[in-house]
Each structure stands twice: as C-alpha cells, then as structure tokens.
Image (cartoon, rainbow, N blue to C red; front, side, top):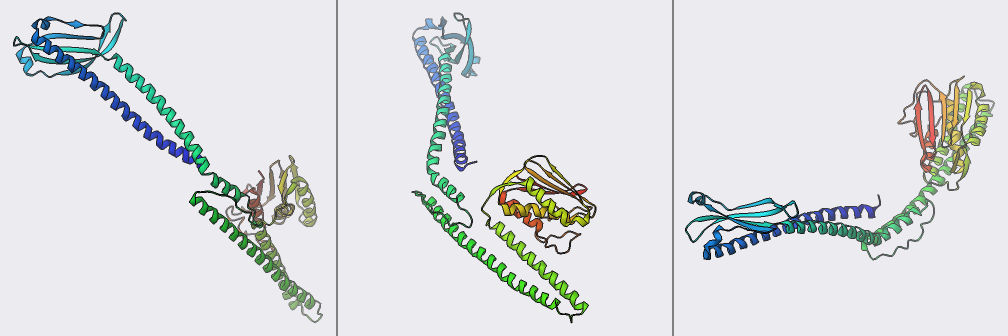
Length: 423
C-alpha cells in the first residue's frame, strides 16, 4: 500500500469516527431540544387553560378536540389528588379523516378549580410535525456527513499527494541508481525541511556506497590477482621438481598432494571471486538466453567427460524456455547444476532434465537426502563429499538466482531434485 493511501485512509477513518460521534451527539441534542419545546408548549396550553377555567367554571365541563390537538377534563377525588403525579406519555391517536393513527404527546396534570374540587387536565398535541422534522434532520445530517467525508478524503488526497511529491521523486531517483555506476544528480527541490534532510542523507549515503563499492571491488580484484601469482609460481616450481629424476616415489607422492591442494586453492579463489562479483552486481549486460540449447550443448560435453560412469541421460523439452540474463552467468548456472548431477550420481545411475516454459528441473539418482536448509550455504559438504570439491558450486547457483530473483528449490523423492523457477 502506498504511503499517501495509507495516510489518507487513516485520516479519513479518524475523521469518520469524529464526525460520526459529532453527528450522533448533535442528533440527540436536537431531538432533546425538539421534545423539550413540545413539552414547553403543552405546559403553556395547560397554564392558559387553568387561567381561563379559574375565571370561567363552565370550561370544567367541556372537551376540546381538533384534528391534531385536544384536551379533556376529569374530576379527581381528594385521595387521588393527594398522591397524584403529573405524567408525560407518547400515544397514537386515531385520525378519521385520513383513516390512520398519528403520534401524539400527552401531558396529564391536576389543578384546584374555583369550586374547591380537583380536576385532571389531559392535554394532547400531535407530534407528526416534530417527527417529520426529526426525519428531515436525519436525512440532511446523513447527506452532510457523506458530502463532508468525501470532500475531506479528496482534499486530503490532493494535499498529501502534493506534499509527498518530493518523496516520490526521491524514490524514483533511488531506483535509478545502478551499483557500480556513478551516482546521478538529485534534483528534488522542496520547501519541507524533513524532505530536504532526507534528500541530503540519501545522496550522501549513495555517494558513500559508491566509494565503498569501488574500494571493495578493487580490493577483491587485487586480492584475487595477488593470490593467483604466488599460486601459479608455486605450481611452476612443483612442475620443475617433478622433472627431477633423483626424486623418490615417496617425494613424488607428497608433491602430487601439494599440487592437488594448490589447484583446490586456485579453484576456491576463483569461486569466491565469482561470488563476490555476482553479489556486487558486476554483470550488467543481459541478453535473451535459450535454456534449451544451452542444456543440450552442455549435457553433450558432460556426457563425454563422465562416460566412464555409464549414466542414463533423459532430456524432456516440454517447451521453449527463454530467460533475460547475462550470458556468462547463464552458462555458469546451468553448468554447475549439470556438473553437480553428473558428479554426485552413482555409476549406472540416471539423470533427468526437464525444461518447461518457466522452469528447469534436474534430477539425479541418490540414496541419501541432503540438508534442505544448508545445501546452498557456502562450504556445505554432504556425507558423500567428492574429492577436489570446493563446496561453493551450489552457493554460486543461489547467488545467481538471487541476482535475477529466480527461485531455486531442492527436494528428495528417491532422487535429488533441483528446480529453478525463472518467473
């Protein structure tokens, strides 16, 4: 989720809760005010009638009724009057003209007339207009609430979009940075102090990373070069000693061990240098690689090399598989996978290569499963470690897959299965 949408959503939710609370409180306040106004009018009608009744006792025997309002008078004995409490009621009154019931507010109280007797005065007033007013109030409040919420959401979205535009430019600039390439200029003018500080921090950090990258690259290349020279010299010296006819068989055996050890160190040095170059993203040129043709070419070479193992090779090309990547890395990726299958397959074993549109699957026979969590770690060695193995072949494969965001999996189903998902 984008920051602008996340922020706008949070602000809108907060405003929704605040406006909803305000709307509910406002509605109940208005409802109470309207009810109180109705009750005040009923009290006023009662006071007016009592004043008239005290002056004209003939009103005590009358009943007044209109379509929406009415009053009635009932005698009350002294005992009832002593314990009488005024009442407020909500009732429905039948309206003959409309053949319907309308809501009314009823107010009952007693008074002492001029003849010394107590009378109950029942005053009724229609609340139809009040209810219509409340209904209208709800409609207008709801409409106002929705309109206000939409306006606030759109307004926040526009304001935040303009406010966060420097951040968007900064992200685009960061995405344009290529490791190993000079840092491009950052043109991102803004009046917001925090964004200015973020621009400066991002630019300075990028410059620092470029310098560190160059230093690391130079150190790796120099270290590899400096190691290769003495190793090559040592090998040449050994070759000269081997030509000495005075060496005993025991000495030749020891020299052979040293020779193989030095070759392992050379291969190890080259592998570590390759991993470093991959992780530093020093392979930039990408082309469209046809995995099918690469597999056929390399399997032909490996079949000839490991002919003595008498392996059965099956290639199932179900679809054309084309991948955009560096040509050198594609050769290393496929070569290491196939070499791993040929080396670790027992004699008279079987290797199956399945090529799909987006997948490459390589299977080889084996008895014991490998550790799925450690198999791609550097220098991981299985129980059936092969001589001259550096333990970096699968680590190189994983580094290449991470570089191009490929997914590689290992499974054991009575045979070792390596699967690469290119997409």
